[in-house]
Image (cartoon, rainbow, N blue to C red; front, side, top):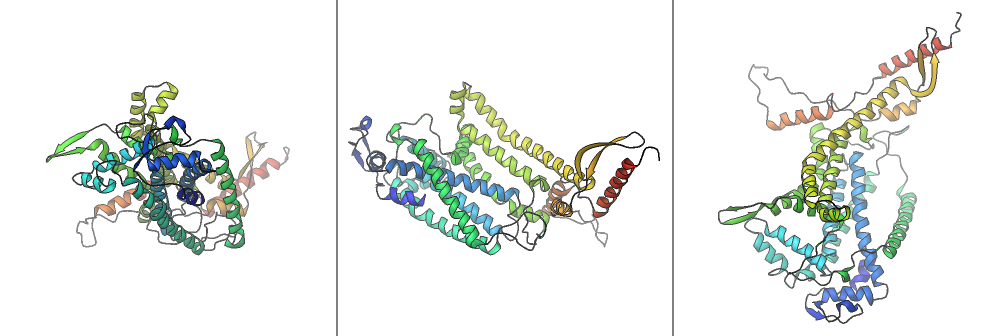
Length: 494
């Protein structure tokens, strides 16, 4: 992104004054357009390698956001966000937020019909803010939309302000990574307070360098054979026109879905019109992101655990957390589908109203269904691990006991395998204190304490996890299996 961005900066002109196009793209010859759009066309058709640089820059931005989201999901499902890595989680979340908005500003710079439609979407969201929305819109656009200042302002923020903040956050992220080290998977010789892993130099640096060139090559190949954002096909932006099938990049697609799924509600209050059809999605948009990013602090409050954690936790061993993350992904997917309801309808010959209503219902139903299913799967996998610990590994060998019973032989697990399956923290649910204190006075508990106990029971109660077998239970079952094996090996006539 940085390498191609520097190259594009040398040729892009962030100005909105009108010019008449007389470049190589003849379908637009003689058309009045902004200088920003004209320079984008010149980069695409006149600058040597300009179109490839544009495509690499755009594809790299998409891959960049995707990689950060996948990385954060891996961190979330493995519980890596726990102490002492909360600051690293927040810095990573900050990088993702800034990356998403910087990408939005980047594809708004060419001033074509598609990017202008996106800015009109942004203007509508700002205008929906009660009382101050009009003033904020005039301040943001430098006057009546679209004004003459928005592209230069976005250019400055896009290439200077946000990248500078992101570099600072990335430096903080890497410094904390070097200080705290990577978490590791449970295994022999690995404990919660000793970190076993490859050194930063030269192993990790060499691997990162290799991955850099691998990603660079794949991105360049995608950019050479897969067209993206052909601005010449849209034409220059005009406020009286709109691109019918306008779609933002995928990482902003769920905001489009929120707008399309929300009914066009309006209310008049004290002489002001509140456009709820835009205001409510405008409020839900950051909430969907913040809920998952503030989750580490919610879990720390529920458990009350202030110890350091350096183990990766298997997702099955935290059923509620895993189900919560899966439900968040389901909600994101429903909104992304809602943002492309017109394309889904046209490509599959479906009713756009039916798709919209399906996504509206899915907004409330899909996360709940996915939460329940995911949690049940995690509990089933926990039961499977418990059975494996107690009875050993299934061998597939069927034996007949002297009294005629057929049993399957089990092979006991090694000590290393037992350690790996049991090396995770299993919290006990919190309990409310007695309703009456020592003096016989009725105890009044704050609402937050009662809420914490209820959440703790849902997380770590009988329906939230399967109890790990104790050492005594494992020994008892091993002795029983040994007796069965000896009985099966006894001669029939004895």
